[in-house]
Image 1 (cartoon, protein in one colour):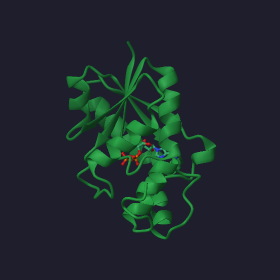
Image 2 (image 1 turned 120 degrees about the vertical axis):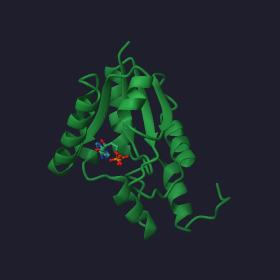
Image 3 (image 1 turned 45 degrees about the vertical axis):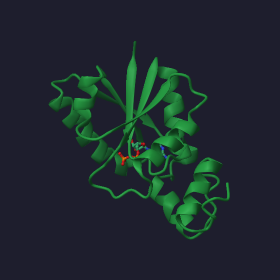
Image 4 (image 1 turned 45 degrees about the horizontal axis):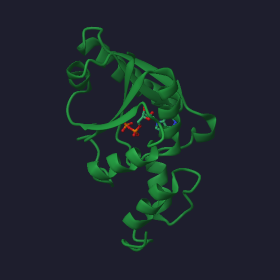
Amino acid sequence: MKIALYPGSFDPVTYGHLDIIKRASQMFDKVIVAVMCNSAKTPLFTLDERVKMITDAVKDLDNVFIESFDGLLINYCKENNIHIVIRGLRAITDFEYELQIAQTNRELSHNEVDTVFLTTNLKYSYLSSSVVKEIASYNGDITPCVPDFVADELYKKYGYLEKNSR
Ligand code: ADP
């Protein structure tokens, strides 16, 4: 069985991530989306909130499973017998960073873990979680960027929607 791991912060999940997840789910038998407690970033959403939003967003994809993890990616891969990591590439600016991480993971795993890159859907090439948060923080329209229920959660975080209005 071909299992692929798609790791990320997903703070929050966007249509760009969801497009990658959907395409990966058609290429592999099983896709595990791993939501990271990334020590280098201070997330807007808690780990539980991020996991819940992705779980809701992919509920129609039978072979996609959501997990959270903390620590080294290659340890997670080893413990779960995973040899393929998926990452999305938006622009050349992603490439340098992603190449370094991919090579590090391959080296640290003694060539057991390879990274497969999926290029962004052009429709979503401008999209990042940071951009979406920036727009939402000014009460801008983020409906082209994230599912409606994620947009509501963002507006709530920034105080534009009552906490219990949904
Ligand atoms: P990280 O903090 O690890 O970069 P993100 O949640 O920001 O995690 O992104 C996870 C993965 O999704 C990364 O490989 C990133 O390049 C990819 N990604 C993010 N936005 C898009 C997009 N609009 N199109 C394609 N891939 C994307």
